[in-house]
Length: 67
Image 1 (cartoon, one colour):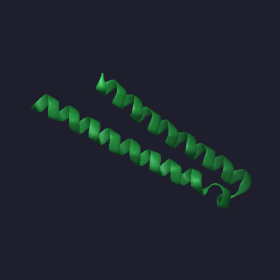
Image 2 (image 1 turned 45 degrees about the vertical axis):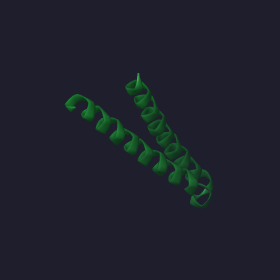
Image 3 (image 1 turned 90 degrees about the horizontal axis):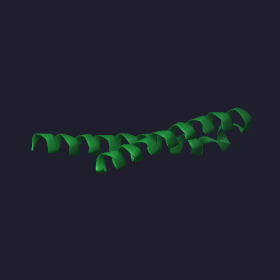
């Protein structure tokens, strides 16, 4: 059950990252970078959160199979 929840949280982080990136590009095209840079920052933060959560999940899974 924990593994499914962890994968769900990972999916939410990567989806948030992609949506922020798309919104940032759209906002940049129509209003300029000065009004859209926060979307790119949030996109990077969400992507790094995805990577961290994925690393933690894989580390926990490898510990259970080897231990």
